[in-house]
Amino acid sequence: MTEADFRKNYEEQAKKNVTNQLIISHIIKEEKIEATEEEVDAKVAEQAESVGKETEEYKKGMDPRQFDYISSDIVITKLFKTLKENNEMYLED
Image (cartoon, rainbow, N blue to C red; front, side, top):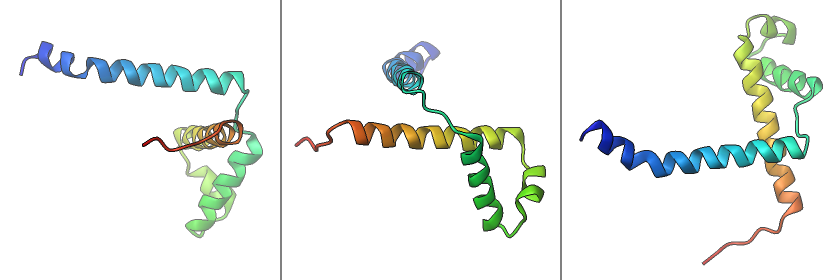
């Protein structure tokens, strides 16, 4: 398979992925969905407890990317909650 063939095979999926990400980002921005410091702290405390450490001790060992991941996880969870609460859900045959 050539590089051109490879790119052609994944072009449509890549377009869908970018479109989906833009839609998600737009909804998050429009709905002003964000993770508060308190929510992040609560999630960090929960993780610390799960490994038997004090929260502050656990925080010191965390990489800044872990805080970003936790924050993103909270935002995505809130996004789906917002979508469920404000839209009618049904299954298609």
